[in-house]
Length: 520
Image 1 (spheres, rainbow, N blue to C red):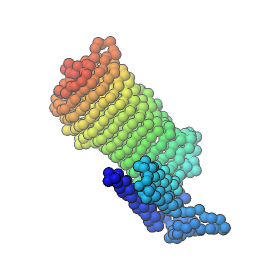
Image 2 (image 1 turned 90 degrees about the horizontal axis):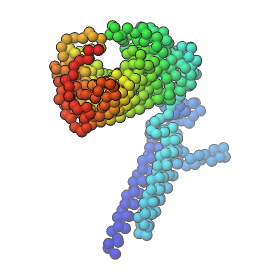
Image 3 (image 1 turned 180 degrees about the horizontal axis):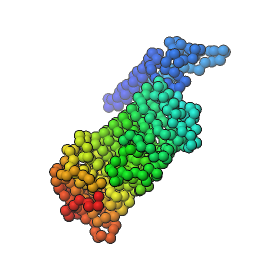
């Protein structure tokens, strides 16, 4: 008998603890209701007293928790009353199970506890629905750009209407959604700048269209600019940002002059924090498609780039001086680097990107300017690169000031008919006018692993490191790259580096001494 009492006592103790926990939860919920904790409000529930309708009940009038009758009809119980009733019922269920523990089985007790938990969960869910909270994100007023005069006919300049709506959104005291209905919205340029008082969601169902005329701009300027925003969300729902750049590509003399910055970038994200951009396509930009600058904790998901191979200097996504940026699930077709990674980029993740046509996924170019910030913590994985001029690449200028690239990983990447699938180029000089001397950008802790597919050139792996600061701690593992050309079997060429090799290596590592590319 003594052996049987211990399990019953333990069961009783567990049930009592559960009952006490739920009772405390009920008390907390009651207290929060009675003191009127601050909460996220919908458009119909203004936060400021001055915004309330005059015939509304004063805020300090408390619900006594009892059902009352009004005009002969029974008044619906308050939200707080519903919470207390559900919690009370849940606690009663567990208490009952505890009192009958001597005759109840462990399974029935567990069932009672589960029912109580469900009651609490249901109460919390009903509160969230009542307060307009879904998935932790507060709802707020919605502003339709057409209500502010936007036409969306592809002919009328809608810039003023968008700016009017934006001014209202950044001044709003509750989270606000800007709604862009179906249509093609022609805009000259948009400076959508914060800071905002509350979070803004940009909900697009239409497209943006740029003027086709080629007008000189300030260097690095953007066509659509989002700046100084926190908790910003852009839901594109398939929206297209059409830069109409075909005319600009024909007059762009960047290849001859090296001056490529006087045309607009399609989309600039500057000083964004804790923000997400999804479901958009940047099409036919006059210059870079997207520039992410001085941002922190920004995610790009389902963001696509679409331009032909002849679109000069139209990098798909460029990142600089930014931390904790994630690019995931994108298809990038363009005339330059699919993704280019500039100085000051840290903790970047590129995953599930399909690149091509273009120039591959590149760190750099680096070392052209003094005082460039280090590039650290770069991960590129699970990507497909096809029919591009390069695969994964690190490029630095000769005669450069000191710099650093550290802790970069390229892994699980498929190459499809790519020219030089793996490339380190520390004598990068695309215009033939470069400073003399070796690059002083130090490359260290680089890892290339599980990279496979076909190379359109004989040299599938080229590690051309600087004699001024040879590459340090380069690891290569499970590389399988075969040549798809007529030059024979693929080879690997190296200079100023001794990589650590493991796993399968096709072609064998560093079988040739590599030389600078004379075709630059």
